[in-house]
Image (cartoon, rainbow, N blue to C red; front, side, top):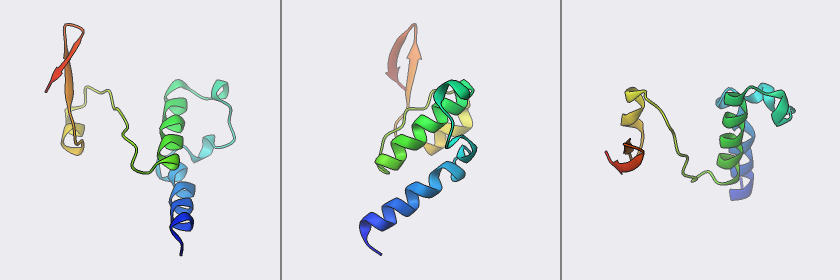
Length: 80
């Protein structure tokens, strides 16, 4: 299988893997805000599987899964 074919196969499976496959034919105005954000992230990953995706969360359980962590304090970004 060629590199392009492998990339296409992975990209085709992303919407279902990220639980937004049901939105594949929807326009942005037809989705909830979180769905639209998830679809945008899915598209970015499909275009570049090495993409960096910012995650904004208060869920500390996710911190162990990221390569780089930044916090905010008084409206400014600071090293975590």
